[in-house]
Structure formats: C-alpha cells, structure tokens
Amino acid sequence: ARVDRLDRITVGPDSAGSTPGPVCYGRGGTEPAVTDANLALGKIDPAYFAGGKIALDEDGARRALQKNIGEPLGLKDFWPAAGVAEIVEENMANAARVHAIERGRDIAACTMIAFGGGAPLHACRLAEKVGVSRIIVPKGAGVGSAIGFLRAPVAYEITRSAVVPLETFDAARVNRLLAQMTADARAVVDPALRSAKPAVQVIADCRYVGQGHEIRVSVPVRKLAGKDGATLKAAFEKLYEQVYGLRIPNQEAEAITWSVTVSSQAAKPKRAAKATAKSAPKPRSRRAIYDPVPGKMVQAPVYWRFDMKPGSKVKGPCIIAEDETSTIVGANFQAAINSLGYIVMERVK
Image (cartoon, rainbow, N blue to C red; front, top):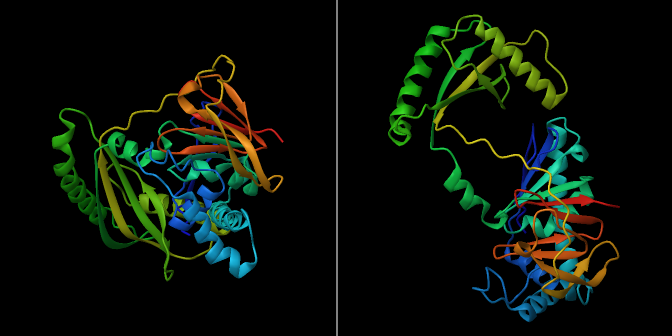
C-alpha cells in the first residue's frame, strides 16, 4: 500500500482560527488493497463512491482480502481488512514521527489537517497513534488538489547551480545571477498579473563543505552585499541545528543551488469565527464500521456533511459523508462544523 503522506510540519495559525501553533499537514492516498480494506471495514459506501458514479464490489473486496491475506495468515471475518488498515496507518504514523523528529517538533502539540480522498478515512486512528488531539478536515477535502490548483497563485520557479562559498561571499556574482533569474521568471508570470505586484522568493540550498545534503535557506530579496554571506551562514547553521541538533564549529559552508520564484500575491485565508452551538441533524442512515478502540464492528450513524450547520456537533463513532470522501469520527473524538464549513475533530478521551 502507498502511504501518501504526512509530509510537512510548519508553524503558523491553523484553519480553525485558534492561537498560532504547529500544524501537521497530511494528505491521504490509497492503492486498491487499501480501498478494498476500507470498503470491507464499512468506511466507504459501495453504492455512493465518487458521489454514486462508481459502484464498488464489496463482496469482491472481501473475497480478495480473504484469499490473499486471510487464508495465508489464518484470519477470518473483518480481520484481514483491519490488518491492512492498521499497517497503513502505522506506516503513516511512523512517517509523521520521523518528520517531526527531523524538525525538532513535538508532534503531539500539532493540529492535523486531513485532505485528499483517503486521509479523512484514517485521520482519527493516525492521530491516536501519534498523540494528536485535534484534526481539521477542510471543505472539499476530497478534491483538495483540484481546489488548490485553481486557487494557487500564478507562479514560475527557476533553479540554477552556482557554488558560492559563504565565508568569501561573492555578492556581485550572486546579484547578477539572481537578477537574470528574476527577469526570466517575471517574463513568464507578468502577463498573467496584469497590473498586480508580483511576490518574489529567493532560496539558496546550503551545506557544510564536503557534505552531500543541503538545507534550504531563505535569501533576502534585495541587492546583496559581502556581509550577507555571514547572514546566510548564520541562517543555515540555525536550521542545521534544528534538524540535526548541533553545529559544526570552524567548518566552512557554501551555497550550491539558487532558486527564484515569482508569483502572484497569495490571498490570506479567512479565520474562523466562533460558531453558535446547534443541535446535530438526524443521521441519513446507519452502517456497520470497524472501530479499532474495542476492536470490533459497530453500528454507526451516517451524517450528510451538508446537513450539518456551523456549530453542530456529533460524537464518534460515526461517519460524516460527502460526495468526494467520508470522514470517520473515531470513538474517542467528537466532530463539529466551524464557521468556515470545516470539520474540526477533538479528542474527548
């Protein structure tokens, strides 16, 4: 199974409008074996996959899981599917732990944002594994990539190699290189901007001399001077220490690759307002789903996401369904709709 993927931890205000804090972004993708498992575990409605446009063979999924996993391992009933899901979620959890350790972050202090068709199916179990207590499922999560493509700033990036020692920083050479790269990038982007002012970002991939891996360092967007070599090295060493826990004294550093990105200005996201508490809607149906807390199949209510108004809350285990995905609310979580229409799940046990 492909785990696709918890891939970034950053620091900033989260989408629910609370105080700034670390945010762990996750995107979930699934291979056929994982889809079969989610189908057999009741996480996917076989008659309403992709908004009802694709019918899924639930019995066929169960037979495939039993033949390829259950029989060789002596597992019956829902256990082959539960084993697939557990392995996938543990792989995702391990990836998240590794990224958090690499960046020196406390993953338990993060808010998880689940987007993509698969992530909302696994988010609660993943959060339990890594100790996260808060999950946000944005509006349109199942087609988040398409929404991002349509809303993303118009941008063009140019990358060029140029080895520049930071101790003997050749500012004139770097300025000529960056000026040409910026002009080339603007020639692509400016026609789409009309009269809008572009945003420019410059990054240098830096390393200690002799190393094979670089760290991306932000470069001031202005004409550089010789003293900026020391500024870049200080920024590099600060990031290096965050990642590896140390600095190498008296070791020369160098920039290897330079990149310039010219883009339109990104719109600032709205912050959620406090929503007035509302009663939960009646569930559309009920469905048996696998609950990993007691380790058995349980009957869970199925709510239609757009029946839930801002401020309404439901307690897990339950399913919040929509055309592009379903959000599985675990037994240890409650879910509420905030003023932006996002699902916010909080651990209650």
